[in-house]
Length: 158
Image (cartoon, rainbow, N blue to C red; front, side, top):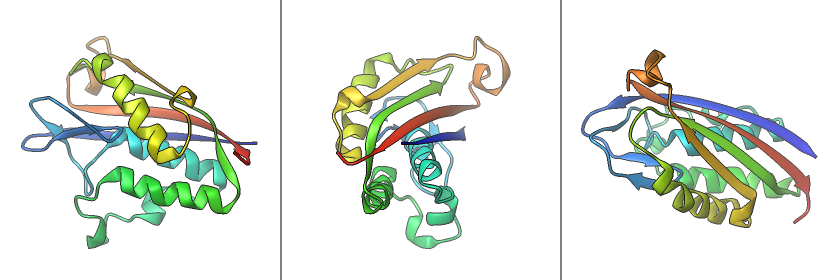
């Protein structure tokens, strides 16, 4: 078994789509980033890479590389999953918490779980996503950005 933790933070930016877990969430702004800034998928990738001892997403998909400009993060996740499979690991379970004052995410979480599970090549019951607010405190509470924390347990085989 291998355990990994991923954390990612992105600030809000106007004139962008808000994408979380490969799902476009209706909102007045999106997140700033070199790729699509899918903070949830980035935290998932970092958790898997951490469990595998393979660095982080910046090592594999640097923001200095034009190939990743506006990249769809779930397709980058597919590459991380291929690295996981190369080492004969699979997802045992994944748990993520999205810290976000606004918008309300609960209606979108089932679709996020299904979408991520598809790209992780696992049952959606192994993917748990929760959302919480910042109780109007700090940069989360001021609606300046979103933070995601993720933990993943990998096991050998399917």
